[in-house]
Length: 278
Image 1 (tube, rainbow, N blue to C red):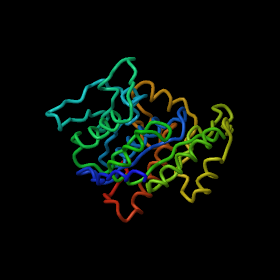
Image 2: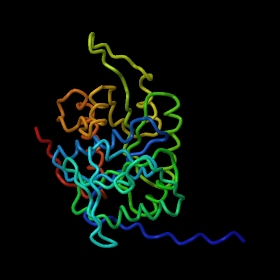
Image 3: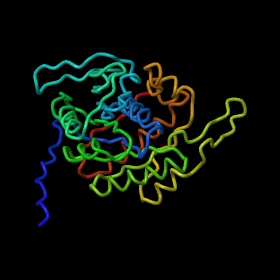
């Protein structure tokens, strides 16, 4: 006889968190963390209370992009204060394991750290908790889905064929575990020549929209290749901090508004008014 399935833990919501948004990708190198960080900051600028959980334990780059090395404080074994950076509440393994020492962890250890980040961190009242997931469809994603009811997932891709092949796998994973896909973000979508303003499709064009249409979800945004986006991430001052009219930030704010609108459509999501600040 086959073994009986193990009983599943109930998916308890995180107290005070209204929307839990996973930012995922099928493969690395598509700018998923850049999208997650700037999405969180754009939502913050638009008037929401926002937290950012860096769940990419093997490549925790959120602290670099937010320009902080501050370590979170543990008040007790089950009470951890998140770090604040640019108005965001944030937790990352990069703050607990700084430097170049790699994380060599197996599934049960990853499950444990995810539970700590979700349940022991004192997030307080948040309109959005953004989860920056590792690329692919591995243990961290499955642990997250087992532990908490995710409001929805944002899938990040580039227009290249290789990235799209992998994002399909991520789409199927979220569908199989009944997590709503909020939509697709096409990052590195195009480049505008600074001299003639001509649009150059470096990695192709339109594939993000086509895959969104194939799966019946919205295209949430097309984020251009802009030096300011790269510079912001490298210097700890993401481009979203410059406001919605800054070079490189317009498409990010358009994407953030589209994500907020999708979440507002969900009847089960607790919704708070989000007012953009000029």
